[in-house]
Image 1 (spheres, rainbow, N blue to C red):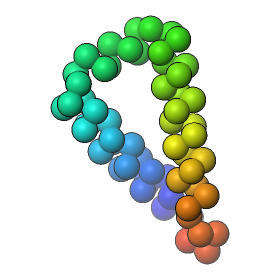
Image 2 (image 1 turned 135 degrees about the vertical axis):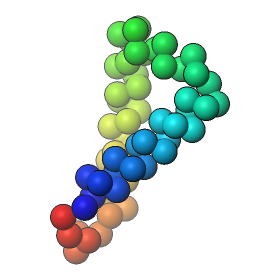
Image 3 (image 1 turned 180 degrees about the vertical axis):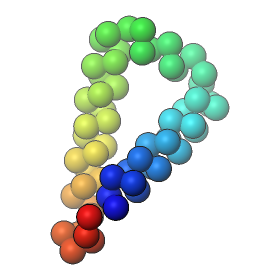
Length: 58
């Protein structure tokens, strides 16, 4: 269940970023920018997982 929720949140964030700044996705051609983006995503994921309660269920 958490994976589905996180996937939906990720999709919404990606869609908002794309509508605000379509050139943002050109960063995927740049390796350094992709590494920074993955680090930011990992930090967001950790923060998101800490907010979840353990009895939420899979």
